[in-house]
Length: 258
Image (cartoon, rainbow, N blue to C red; front, side, top):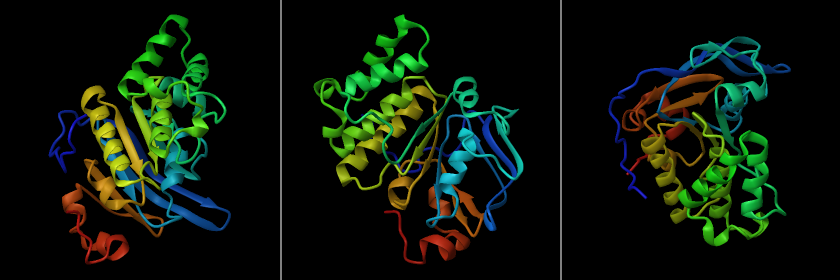
């Protein structure tokens, strides 16, 4: 696997916007979660989201997948207004994949049977199912553990499994919810390398939210800080940590990325 190159991309060959939020607002009852937020994610970009608990990071993922709808505003995917599109259309038509923080697999099935079960749902052509399964098993070096039940896998192996499951459908957009949570340093490094390689090899657009700020900033091209229902800063990692608004709302004045 490749070596993490901190802040390796200064400009993008493609500036095509694949996801865009326009004037999005959302409330749960009387509690305002997102207040007129606007941002874009470019095709092939690794995009990060940071912010305190309850600030709306997972809500943004739910809005992208179609699990919930905004109170105001529009969501565009590949230039199409997808605001009212249901989950299955966003998955099938726009190829949006999602890797949850917890679960995402069948505990009592082997790793291989997990891949087989999901492939039968999302891959219509039977001849392609084994091809895709063998591809992700090889890509994530899972052959030696493919007959082990998912519940007996290590934390890092489970993360590899859910990533492999998400990649079966060859997504163009991949959402990673807290991928570095509760993992050891070596496993986090492994996942960072996987994320960077997915971008470099497949040009997949990746959006990550996590509380592990240093780990997230080591592998994203651009990140934004959410606070008090707003986007208060958005920039490359090296610039973001110097941003006074980001420091005041999230990083503090002693945070360093090295």
